[in-house]
Image 1 (tube, rainbow, N blue to C red):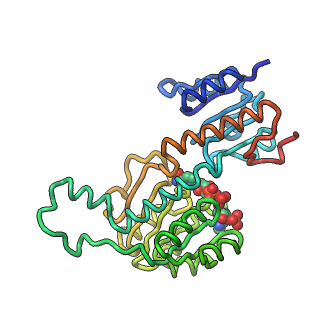
Image 2: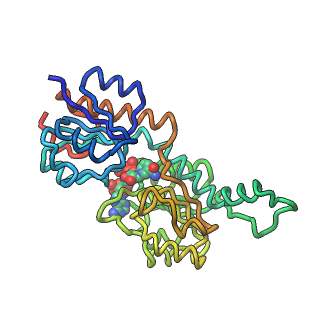
Length: 323
Ligand code: NAP
Protein backbone atom coordinates (compact mmCIF):
# COMPACT_ATOMS: atom_id res chain seq x y z
CA UNK A 1 0.00 0.00 0.00
CA UNK A 2 1.32 3.44 -0.94
CA UNK A 3 1.52 5.74 2.03
CA UNK A 4 0.00 9.22 2.14
CA UNK A 5 2.15 12.32 2.38
CA UNK A 6 0.96 15.87 2.98
CA UNK A 7 3.12 18.77 1.82
CA UNK A 8 2.08 21.81 3.85
CA UNK A 9 4.63 24.32 2.53
CA UNK A 10 5.95 24.90 -0.94
CA UNK A 11 8.53 22.34 -2.04
CA UNK A 12 10.54 22.58 -5.28
CA UNK A 13 8.69 20.83 -8.13
CA UNK A 14 11.36 18.12 -8.74
CA UNK A 15 11.08 17.10 -5.07
CA UNK A 16 7.29 16.99 -5.19
CA UNK A 17 7.71 14.77 -8.25
CA UNK A 18 10.18 12.56 -6.40
CA UNK A 19 7.77 12.13 -3.48
CA UNK A 20 4.88 11.44 -5.89
CA UNK A 21 6.75 8.49 -7.35
CA UNK A 22 6.75 6.72 -3.98
CA UNK A 23 3.72 8.10 -2.13
CA UNK A 24 0.21 9.50 -2.62
CA UNK A 25 0.92 13.18 -2.27
CA UNK A 26 -1.45 15.96 -1.22
CA UNK A 27 -0.16 19.51 -1.59
CA UNK A 28 -1.94 22.06 0.60
CA UNK A 29 -2.99 24.90 -1.65
CA UNK A 30 -2.02 28.07 0.18
CA UNK A 31 -4.56 30.07 -1.82
CA UNK A 32 -7.49 28.07 -0.41
CA UNK A 33 -8.73 27.40 3.12
CA UNK A 34 -5.47 26.07 4.46
CA UNK A 35 -6.72 24.83 7.85
CA UNK A 36 -9.67 22.97 6.39
CA UNK A 37 -7.56 21.31 3.69
CA UNK A 38 -4.88 20.44 6.22
CA UNK A 39 -7.30 18.89 8.70
CA UNK A 40 -8.96 16.89 5.93
CA UNK A 41 -5.61 15.62 4.58
CA UNK A 42 -4.42 14.76 8.10
CA UNK A 43 -7.10 12.08 8.48
CA UNK A 44 -5.17 9.76 6.17
CA UNK A 45 -1.64 11.16 6.39
CA UNK A 46 1.29 8.92 7.24
CA UNK A 47 3.84 11.68 6.72
CA UNK A 48 3.90 15.48 6.82
CA UNK A 49 6.56 17.73 5.33
CA UNK A 50 6.84 21.51 5.72
CA UNK A 51 7.81 24.26 8.15
CA UNK A 52 6.65 27.26 10.15
CA UNK A 53 3.44 25.67 11.42
CA UNK A 54 2.54 25.04 15.03
CA UNK A 55 1.87 21.32 15.36
CA UNK A 56 0.84 19.77 18.66
CA UNK A 57 -2.00 18.00 20.43
CA UNK A 58 -4.74 20.31 19.15
CA UNK A 59 -3.67 20.44 15.49
CA UNK A 60 -2.92 16.73 15.26
CA UNK A 61 -5.85 15.30 17.19
CA UNK A 62 -7.28 13.56 14.09
CA UNK A 63 -3.94 12.40 12.68
CA UNK A 64 -4.35 8.80 13.68
CA UNK A 65 -2.10 7.32 11.01
CA UNK A 66 0.74 9.80 11.34
CA UNK A 67 4.20 8.23 11.54
CA UNK A 68 6.54 11.13 10.82
CA UNK A 69 6.75 14.90 10.50
CA UNK A 70 9.69 16.09 8.43
CA UNK A 71 10.42 19.72 9.20
CA UNK A 72 12.20 21.83 6.58
CA UNK A 73 14.08 23.74 9.28
CA UNK A 74 16.74 23.18 11.90
CA UNK A 75 14.73 24.82 14.72
CA UNK A 76 11.81 22.73 15.97
CA UNK A 77 10.24 25.05 18.55
CA UNK A 78 6.92 25.07 16.66
CA UNK A 79 6.38 21.37 17.40
CA UNK A 80 5.19 19.87 20.67
CA UNK A 81 7.97 17.29 20.83
CA UNK A 82 6.83 15.57 24.06
CA UNK A 83 3.37 15.09 22.54
CA UNK A 84 4.81 13.71 19.28
CA UNK A 85 7.01 11.30 21.23
CA UNK A 86 4.09 10.23 23.40
CA UNK A 87 2.13 9.46 20.20
CA UNK A 88 5.08 7.60 18.65
CA UNK A 89 5.40 10.18 15.85
CA UNK A 90 8.94 10.75 14.57
CA UNK A 91 10.15 14.33 14.09
CA UNK A 92 13.06 15.14 11.79
CA UNK A 93 14.79 18.46 10.98
CA UNK A 94 17.46 19.75 8.59
CA UNK A 95 20.65 20.72 10.44
CA UNK A 96 24.04 21.37 8.79
CA UNK A 97 22.82 22.28 5.29
CA UNK A 98 21.80 25.78 6.41
CA UNK A 99 24.64 26.49 8.82
CA UNK A 100 26.94 28.50 6.54
CA UNK A 101 24.14 30.46 4.86
CA UNK A 102 22.61 31.43 8.21
CA UNK A 103 26.03 32.46 9.52
CA UNK A 104 26.50 34.59 6.38
CA UNK A 105 23.18 36.29 7.08
CA UNK A 106 24.11 36.82 10.74
CA UNK A 107 27.29 38.50 9.70
CA UNK A 108 25.58 40.54 6.99
CA UNK A 109 23.12 41.78 9.61
CA UNK A 110 25.94 42.62 11.99
CA UNK A 111 27.77 44.59 9.28
CA UNK A 112 24.59 46.30 8.10
CA UNK A 113 23.71 47.43 11.60
CA UNK A 114 27.23 48.60 12.44
CA UNK A 115 27.63 50.53 9.18
CA UNK A 116 23.95 51.52 8.91
CA UNK A 117 23.64 50.19 5.37
CA UNK A 118 19.83 50.11 4.93
CA UNK A 119 19.45 53.61 6.39
CA UNK A 120 22.16 55.08 4.19
CA UNK A 121 20.92 53.20 1.13
CA UNK A 122 17.50 54.82 1.68
CA UNK A 123 19.21 58.20 2.20
CA UNK A 124 21.12 57.90 -1.07
CA UNK A 125 18.12 56.75 -3.09
CA UNK A 126 15.98 59.55 -1.62
CA UNK A 127 18.35 62.04 -3.27
CA UNK A 128 19.57 63.35 0.09
CA UNK A 129 23.27 62.90 -0.76
CA UNK A 130 23.76 66.45 -1.90
CA UNK A 131 26.97 67.16 0.01
CA UNK A 132 29.69 65.18 1.72
CA UNK A 133 28.46 63.06 4.62
CA UNK A 134 29.30 64.07 8.16
CA UNK A 135 29.59 62.44 11.58
CA UNK A 136 25.85 62.00 11.92
CA UNK A 137 26.07 59.31 9.23
CA UNK A 138 29.09 57.51 10.59
CA UNK A 139 28.86 53.90 11.70
CA UNK A 140 31.05 51.88 14.02
CA UNK A 141 33.96 49.52 13.29
CA UNK A 142 33.52 45.77 13.14
CA UNK A 143 37.12 44.80 12.50
CA UNK A 144 39.06 44.08 15.71
CA UNK A 145 36.02 44.40 18.01
CA UNK A 146 34.71 41.88 20.55
CA UNK A 147 32.01 39.50 19.32
CA UNK A 148 29.95 37.71 21.98
CA UNK A 149 28.14 34.65 20.67
CA UNK A 150 25.27 33.24 22.73
CA UNK A 151 24.81 29.63 21.56
CA UNK A 152 28.05 28.15 20.24
CA UNK A 153 26.55 25.32 18.20
CA UNK A 154 26.80 24.76 14.46
CA UNK A 155 25.78 28.28 13.42
CA UNK A 156 27.48 29.99 16.38
CA UNK A 157 30.78 28.33 15.46
CA UNK A 158 30.40 29.38 11.81
CA UNK A 159 29.89 32.98 12.95
CA UNK A 160 32.93 32.73 15.23
CA UNK A 161 34.98 31.56 12.25
CA UNK A 162 33.96 34.60 10.21
CA UNK A 163 34.65 36.97 13.10
CA UNK A 164 38.01 35.47 14.01
CA UNK A 165 39.54 34.83 10.58
CA UNK A 166 37.73 37.48 8.55
CA UNK A 167 37.61 40.42 10.93
CA UNK A 168 40.28 39.75 13.53
CA UNK A 169 37.63 39.90 16.25
CA UNK A 170 38.02 38.70 19.81
CA UNK A 171 35.49 35.92 20.30
CA UNK A 172 33.56 35.40 23.55
CA UNK A 173 30.88 32.75 23.81
CA UNK A 174 28.21 31.40 26.10
CA UNK A 175 26.65 27.95 25.65
CA UNK A 176 25.36 24.99 27.62
CA UNK A 177 28.86 23.49 27.65
CA UNK A 178 32.47 24.49 27.04
CA UNK A 179 33.96 23.95 23.55
CA UNK A 180 37.70 23.28 23.98
CA UNK A 181 38.27 22.77 20.23
CA UNK A 182 36.62 26.06 19.30
CA UNK A 183 38.47 27.84 22.09
CA UNK A 184 41.67 26.69 20.40
CA UNK A 185 40.59 27.22 16.79
CA UNK A 186 39.14 30.73 17.19
CA UNK A 187 40.83 31.74 20.45
CA UNK A 188 37.29 31.83 21.80
CA UNK A 189 36.81 32.51 25.50
CA UNK A 190 33.89 31.14 27.54
CA UNK A 191 31.89 33.63 29.60
CA UNK A 192 28.78 33.46 31.73
CA UNK A 193 25.96 35.41 30.10
CA UNK A 194 26.38 38.51 32.26
CA UNK A 195 30.09 38.87 31.57
CA UNK A 196 29.58 38.26 27.86
CA UNK A 197 26.97 41.04 27.71
CA UNK A 198 29.23 43.43 29.61
CA UNK A 199 32.35 42.79 27.54
CA UNK A 200 31.01 42.45 23.99
CA UNK A 201 30.70 45.12 21.30
CA UNK A 202 28.39 42.82 19.35
CA UNK A 203 26.14 40.22 20.97
CA UNK A 204 24.87 37.60 18.53
CA UNK A 205 22.06 35.26 19.62
CA UNK A 206 22.05 31.78 18.04
CA UNK A 207 20.38 29.56 20.63
CA UNK A 208 17.33 27.37 19.96
CA UNK A 209 14.05 28.58 21.46
CA UNK A 210 13.37 26.46 24.54
CA UNK A 211 11.97 27.12 28.00
CA UNK A 212 15.52 27.94 29.15
CA UNK A 213 16.16 30.50 26.38
CA UNK A 214 12.73 32.17 26.20
CA UNK A 215 13.19 35.87 27.13
CA UNK A 216 16.82 35.16 27.92
CA UNK A 217 17.53 38.77 26.98
CA UNK A 218 15.29 41.18 28.88
CA UNK A 219 15.57 44.67 30.39
CA UNK A 220 18.18 43.56 32.94
CA UNK A 221 20.39 41.91 30.33
CA UNK A 222 20.09 44.88 27.95
CA UNK A 223 21.22 47.15 30.79
CA UNK A 224 24.36 45.04 31.12
CA UNK A 225 25.35 45.70 27.50
CA UNK A 226 27.72 48.53 26.61
CA UNK A 227 25.98 51.75 25.51
CA UNK A 228 27.91 51.28 22.24
CA UNK A 229 26.78 47.63 22.00
CA UNK A 230 24.81 46.10 19.14
CA UNK A 231 22.45 43.14 19.55
CA UNK A 232 21.97 40.69 16.66
CA UNK A 233 19.16 38.15 16.87
CA UNK A 234 19.08 35.38 14.28
CA UNK A 235 17.79 32.77 16.76
CA UNK A 236 14.07 33.15 17.46
CA UNK A 237 12.10 36.26 18.40
CA UNK A 238 10.92 35.13 21.86
CA UNK A 239 14.54 34.71 23.00
CA UNK A 240 14.39 38.50 23.47
CA UNK A 241 11.82 40.53 25.41
CA UNK A 242 10.88 42.69 22.44
CA UNK A 243 9.17 45.44 24.48
CA UNK A 244 12.32 45.82 26.60
CA UNK A 245 14.44 45.92 23.46
CA UNK A 246 12.25 48.62 21.91
CA UNK A 247 12.67 50.67 25.07
CA UNK A 248 16.44 50.20 25.15
CA UNK A 249 16.71 51.20 21.49
CA UNK A 250 14.36 54.18 21.83
CA UNK A 251 16.39 55.49 24.77
CA UNK A 252 19.64 54.73 22.96
CA UNK A 253 20.64 52.66 25.93
CA UNK A 254 22.38 50.43 23.37
CA UNK A 255 23.62 51.55 19.96
CA UNK A 256 21.49 49.32 17.79
CA UNK A 257 20.01 45.96 16.88
CA UNK A 258 19.89 43.73 13.83
CA UNK A 259 16.85 41.45 13.88
CA UNK A 260 15.96 38.59 11.58
CA UNK A 261 13.34 37.17 13.97
CA UNK A 262 10.48 38.60 16.04
CA UNK A 263 8.03 37.63 18.74
CA UNK A 264 5.25 37.66 16.13
CA UNK A 265 5.90 36.55 12.57
CA UNK A 266 5.08 37.66 9.96
CA UNK A 267 5.22 41.25 11.21
CA UNK A 268 3.67 44.08 9.22
CA UNK A 269 3.62 46.80 11.87
CA UNK A 270 5.86 47.46 14.87
CA UNK A 271 7.39 50.36 16.83
CA UNK A 272 10.70 48.86 15.67
CA UNK A 273 10.01 50.06 12.14
CA UNK A 274 10.29 53.70 13.11
CA UNK A 275 13.65 53.30 14.84
CA UNK A 276 16.68 54.22 12.76
CA UNK A 277 19.06 52.18 14.88
CA UNK A 278 17.39 48.87 13.99
CA UNK A 279 17.82 46.75 10.90
CA UNK A 280 14.86 44.43 10.39
CA UNK A 281 14.65 41.42 8.09
CA UNK A 282 11.75 39.02 7.35
CA UNK A 283 13.32 35.86 8.83
CA UNK A 284 15.67 35.14 5.93
CA UNK A 285 18.51 33.32 7.71
CA UNK A 286 18.46 30.33 5.37
CA UNK A 287 16.65 31.98 2.47
CA UNK A 288 18.91 31.43 -0.53
CA UNK A 289 18.00 29.35 -3.58
CA UNK A 290 20.76 26.84 -2.95
CA UNK A 291 20.18 26.40 0.76
CA UNK A 292 16.40 26.22 0.65
CA UNK A 293 16.72 23.53 -2.03
CA UNK A 294 19.26 21.61 0.05
CA UNK A 295 16.98 21.83 3.11
CA UNK A 296 14.00 20.56 1.13
CA UNK A 297 16.12 17.70 -0.28
CA UNK A 298 17.27 16.72 3.19
CA UNK A 299 13.70 16.84 4.50
CA UNK A 300 12.46 14.67 1.62
CA UNK A 301 15.24 12.20 2.32
CA UNK A 302 14.31 12.07 6.04
CA UNK A 303 10.63 11.58 5.25
CA UNK A 304 11.28 8.90 2.65
CA UNK A 305 13.57 7.00 4.99
CA UNK A 306 11.08 7.08 7.85
CA UNK A 307 8.13 5.94 5.72
CA UNK A 308 10.25 3.18 4.19
CA UNK A 309 11.23 1.76 7.56
CA UNK A 310 14.77 3.15 7.53
CA UNK A 311 16.26 5.34 10.24
CA UNK A 312 16.17 8.98 9.09
CA UNK A 313 19.44 10.92 9.26
CA UNK A 314 18.12 13.73 11.48
CA UNK A 315 15.91 12.43 14.26
CA UNK A 316 14.83 15.03 16.82
CA UNK A 317 13.17 12.38 19.03
CA UNK A 318 15.31 9.26 18.49
CA UNK A 319 13.64 7.54 21.44
CA UNK A 320 10.60 7.00 19.19
CA UNK A 321 12.63 5.07 16.59
CA UNK A 322 11.86 1.40 16.91
CA UNK A 323 14.19 0.33 14.04
P1 NAP B 1 22.83 23.92 17.64
O1 NAP B 1 23.99 23.38 16.85
O2 NAP B 1 21.97 22.96 18.37
O3 NAP B 1 23.41 25.02 18.65
C1 NAP B 1 22.68 25.58 19.69
C2 NAP B 1 23.61 26.18 20.72
O4 NAP B 1 22.82 26.83 21.72
C3 NAP B 1 24.46 25.15 21.45
O5 NAP B 1 25.77 25.63 21.62
C4 NAP B 1 23.78 25.02 22.82
O6 NAP B 1 24.66 24.66 23.87
C5 NAP B 1 23.30 26.43 22.99
N1 NAP B 1 22.24 26.53 24.00
C6 NAP B 1 21.07 25.86 24.07
N2 NAP B 1 20.37 26.25 25.16
C7 NAP B 1 21.13 27.17 25.80
C8 NAP B 1 20.97 27.93 26.99
N3 NAP B 1 19.87 27.83 27.75
N4 NAP B 1 21.96 28.78 27.33
C9 NAP B 1 23.06 28.90 26.58
N5 NAP B 1 23.27 28.23 25.44
C10 NAP B 1 22.31 27.36 25.06
O7 NAP B 1 21.84 24.73 16.69
P2 NAP B 1 22.17 25.55 15.35
O8 NAP B 1 22.06 24.67 14.17
O9 NAP B 1 23.42 26.34 15.55
O10 NAP B 1 20.88 26.51 15.32
C11 NAP B 1 20.60 27.36 16.42
C12 NAP B 1 19.23 28.01 16.27
O11 NAP B 1 19.30 29.03 15.29
C13 NAP B 1 18.11 27.09 15.77
O12 NAP B 1 17.54 26.32 16.83
C14 NAP B 1 17.12 28.06 15.19
O13 NAP B 1 16.14 28.44 16.14
C15 NAP B 1 17.98 29.27 14.81
N6 NAP B 1 18.04 29.43 13.34
C16 NAP B 1 17.50 30.57 12.80
C17 NAP B 1 17.56 30.75 11.42
C18 NAP B 1 17.00 32.00 10.79
O14 NAP B 1 16.48 31.91 9.69
N7 NAP B 1 17.13 33.14 11.42
C19 NAP B 1 18.12 29.76 10.59
C20 NAP B 1 18.64 28.62 11.19
C21 NAP B 1 18.59 28.46 12.57
P3 NAP B 1 25.42 23.23 23.87
O15 NAP B 1 26.43 23.34 22.78
O16 NAP B 1 26.05 23.13 25.19
O17 NAP B 1 24.36 22.21 23.58
